Length: 286
Length: 156
Image 1 (cartoon, rainbow over the protein chains, first blue to last red):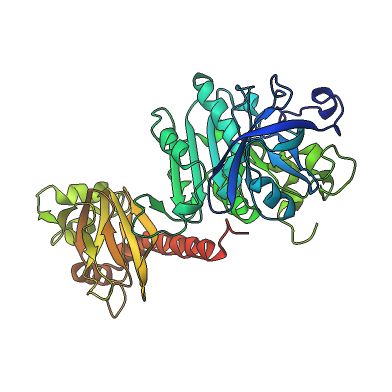
Image 2 (cartoon, helix red, strand yellow; image 1 turned 120 degrees about the vertical axis):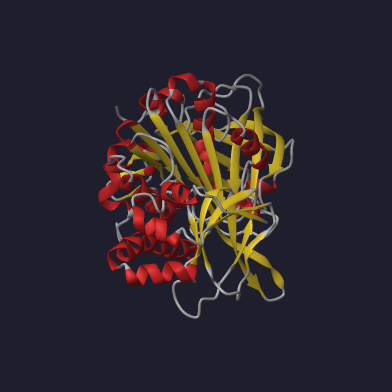
């Protein structure tokens, strides 16, 4: 089964029309990363979204940025996005205080293959802020736990202070019927958890490679080595899904800003089956 | 730290993932001076610069490999857990530990005597080769992991 493609034209009446949202809460995840919880300014529910999809967030007078939805797909009263301040727009978005208005359009893009994952072992590997696009999938796994076999979640960050969703991760790690491992690249003596790159967790992960679907999200270089480890454990290329981050503008495949080889990341992704993009994903030049 | 010896120690050694499948006689030979030890959270297995006279098989727990930095806190560069091994400085001169090793939680290990191990690796080349075939991937994986850490993959 292919990953789940949500038609932008069917889920969004006019893909270029912004809807105003009011920031209800903002919380700092790390020194440069902030989670915004927003509600529709006109009341009502947020549009249905699938894990892995993204919205375009508009900071008035500054511009738009594509940001993955990071909230629970079952909760339709609030829209949650986790944003790293890396440029003009994301700096503006993360500086907004509660009560500020943000323009939102979406959701867009191909989601994680939640249907295909059912009745399979599931391996989820996230790195850094790559946990944000995976978080809705984790909620979905928790909400529908009985529909999945073994679940292994592995999360890597640069250091303990770079871990996002720290409190929530503590709760997730306490869940008995899955294993959630966290590792950091380096740490001081205050850290009693695992240290080492996230790939070090993969050899001991418990799954049947013939019956496993893997979700991977993080920086490209991290995904490269994670995929090597996962295929080394025997998971076929067409059972590994990755989420790509590229510079998206229109979000519906018109403008070409996010073209990556033969694909438009916004329209054909951001979630891809690794076997579909393997030929150019790690090429020196595309 | 507490230590104990046991008649069944060689059996425990033979069941450790690193040693499992090695020749039974070889395991018996290298088990002779082995000691099972327990460390509580915060206790040191060894310190940088000390004589590397043991090879540690971790049975259960977690060990941090730490690097001292001038005028800064110690940095944990790797953790080692159940079924893994700690240390190979005992294999090559000058037989000094390059890092500190500290228990992050209650940890049980078997400490093999390094001198006895070296003697048996040398006098039993086939078993020694099989042993090195297991140790080399550990060294290689740690080298590769260190390279990935150097790349700072989450910072790009």
